Each structure stands twice: as structure tokens, then as C-alpha cells.
Amino acid sequence: MARRKTISDEQIHDILLDTILETGPAGLTFARAAADCGLAPATLVQRYGDREAMVQAILLRAWDVLDAETEAADAEEESSPQGAIEVLIRLMPTDVAERNATDGLLLLREDIRNPALRARGAAWGRALVKALGRRLSNDPERGERLGWQMASLWQGAHTWWAFTQDEPAERAIRRVLEQWLRDMKVA
Image (tube, rainbow, N blue to C red; front, side):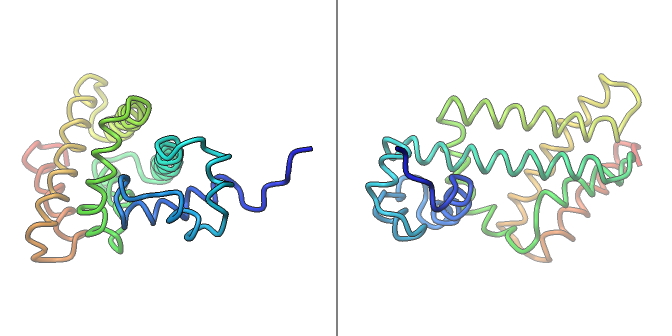
């Protein structure tokens, strides 16, 4: 008879995402994971098989969470150019903006290298662009172009903010996005 799980996979993944942000994917060992989530290393090996599968499961869970946050923001923010900005700001919590711009790059590297994670990232990007695009134009083709531009600008603004940090992240990124809307005559 199979033993009952004392902690769900989702709970483990949520705990260990913080560990991966601290150690980087390469630094996550079964011993470290066990210490952080309270399970024995052998239990984690039994669940995941190997370290790479454990890392992939954790990062797939992170994509699940981001998908849900994106869907909620899309459903709740107004259908306007300003609503597009609000969707993006919601996806970049200011309390973790610096961590996401620095430690998050280690996760991004892993997401790009792993085909399953890369596919999830691409699917999320398309969903985000669709949410942005319909707020930016009634023409689907133009909306898609503008959505990709805005998403790219958002990521770039976040990266450049991480270097300068001259003002709070939300203010800096919002300013860049609003200026782009004015320049594109979308607002």
C-alpha cells in the first residue's frame, strides 16, 4: 500500500522555488531540498527520480503560478492601454523586483535550456501578448505587434531599472511604458 503524502508536490515546489532563487538551479541538491522542505532526501529521490526532474517540476510549478496570475490580471484589469500597463505591473511585484531581475536570471537560463520549460515560457508569452494586444488595438494584427513590443519593453525596462535603481521599480517601469504609449499614440 502506498504511503500518504504528508506534504503536497505543490507545497514542496513553492518552498523550493525560494531555495532555487537563492542557490540557482545548479545549487539545488537533494540534501538542501530536504532540509528546506522537511522531507528526507530519499523521499525526494523517490518522488522525482533525479535532481534535474525535481528542478523541472519546481520550475513548471512556477510557470503554473505565473499563468494563473496572468489570467487573473487579464480578467480583472480594464480593457484599455492603461489596463495593459496594470497587467504588467501586477506581474512584477515591487517587493521582489530586484530579486526577479537578478536571481531570476538563473531561472530564465534554465527555462531557455530545458525544452519543456522553454515551451511553457513561449506559451505564457503568447498569452501575455494576447492580453496586452487586445488592450492596445482593435486590429488583431496590430494588437499582436504592439503586445510583443510592450512585453519586450517591459522586460527591458525591468532589466535597466535593476542596473540604475534611481527610483522605485514600479515608478520607473510605469514611466517607460506610459511614455511608449504616448510615443506610439496608443494612449
